[in-house]
Image: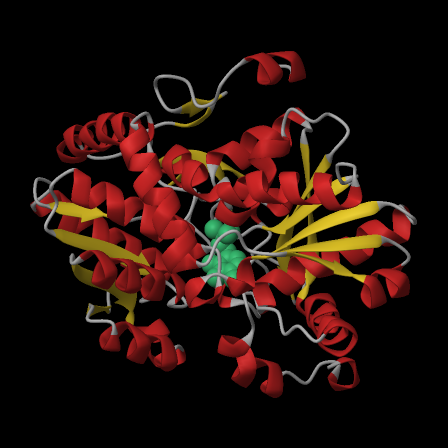
Length: 404
Ligand SMILES: *Cc1c(COP(=O)(O)O)cnc(C)c1O
């Protein structure tokens, strides 16, 4: 696989492969449902009526296009021309709504009556509950019992929005177990139920489908920065959990060879297994949640527990397209620690009057690393979400209190 074939080829291929990555590693019972979804999604995305409906909802209900903000003070402080794509200003406070709305519209078009979703920190659950309420779909959200305790504000939001929450006590009782249970629910009735997956992970067609719905971020940002700065950025930077906001930002820039792409993972509190969620920078090849990609596992192939101060990045896998971009060297993946992310969060608050999500603060800390090595350049950062949800964690964080 070469850069030329990436430039010429369209990923994924017909089998849902990104080079060797991706595919469908699922029980026989799910293959039919995934193929129906694949066909339904391709028909929808080729239908101008569907695209018009989606565009109208993105404008009227989500609030798109989100602004592009030039950060004069923080940029001067770091020695770069810094631009933020403001997904924090999208409805429900993060990029997740782009995908939740897109898939909910698709569910309706395909005749589903009921939507199931998984959620870890609750952000995808809130976005899905909101989209389902808006479109009149019944919504069930699977959430680990541990996460329900940790993220009670989002649980309350989902209930207000009319979703039913199912507490998952099996396995890790966190996101990983919630995905398994949501898939189990879907298998039991794939005709009338639609599984609304929250990141660019899972079996084909999800990594592709989620990328298509999130690419609105990069399309808007590319046009906006071109108009305002009269150039493309030297680098586009996003945080990487499962990889949906990053692939959404990167995708429209992939053929712009002059634009470097940086994905920033959660380096947590150290390099030991279990202390971070830096999947690409520290993981190895394996199958997780139906897809062949890079994951964090021990020598026996057991999936590792992860740590990040940011709940949205605390996941041991990553989408297969990132595994390919990394393999080809088209995107570079680095990690920043909890402390670096929290320091960047404080700087954006004080110098720009914007409180970012801790997830997004990882992308900002990545921009600071970039700035040290590339002063004077034009830098585009995807600010994936707002930080109001993180107030308790921010206030409880004490490693570098003077930085916040
Ligand atoms: C969920 C979340 C992320 C991580 O998910 P990706 O699929 O990697 O984008 C990043 N930022 C925010 C604000 C989130 O809510």
